[in-house]
Length: 405
Image (cartoon, rainbow, N blue to C red; front, side, top):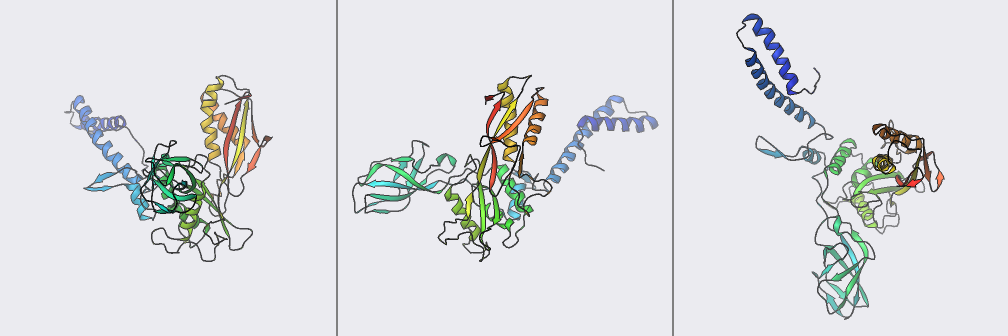
């Protein structure tokens, strides 16, 4: 029997028909009103059990397991998180604090900048503290600082300025960010955690295969996806292209600090520090200085879309309706890697025809019409484009009837 969703009314009607058919035929003592009331009660009880069984069925698979906490027979459990723990993903990540290095101007040499000194950024409004004592010997000094609160709201970039909360006698009040050591991240969302669990469930460790690099990199907060390749210039070389989580890196291009974290995660177990990840002969750090030159950020390829002959709706409304669909199409494209990508559903080709199909479906839903769709890259007409190593696509500009939106 197929598991089909039914409403209380459908079950009630089935019971009424069955009761009337059986009892009134033989005894004829049950009034019609009693049968209806009794059938409604039984239908309510039945639908509760029916939905409960269906809910438990969904917990069998990571794609549909419940995210929030439930209490069953006195035990509290989060089904999706339980899946993640069982297959080695662990629990959802908590937010991390931004950590970086600042350059301070020294006013009193041969002194020490003590840990715990507070700085504030006018850009983020957050407080940052120094962590280690630093000897002030030259005209400038470099000091590591950490944001006091986790999350992306505390992220700073090279060149951003901070001010010491309390003036110090040995350094100037204003300091400048000279490097980012770790990007701050928010608490992991349900969608991000579910994606990690599903990917880990599908890609089992193989002792250093391409899929293993994707698994190892996923342990680093802020990583969206990893695209591993064999280095064509080195038989033992491995090149990894990393895309960043849009919540941390809006353009999906990660920082150098994140790339270094990925290199460490692919080399050493973050919990034990043991070098039990990549094979000893695989090279991801050809300079052997922990710069991980073979771990690179993804390259974003921008496309412009021009739609002409739009009628039946205002251009502003049409742009607002179709933009999310077009952006979603481009965000869903990624390079093809044999052994990792789905051979039956390749997404490495960006096509004008596919974009036109997306627009056509949305236009039909709002009873709008258009005549032509054209796709451009770098100012030139581009009917189709195949994403190369480490390339991702993005909607750049949208033109409707010659007007940019």
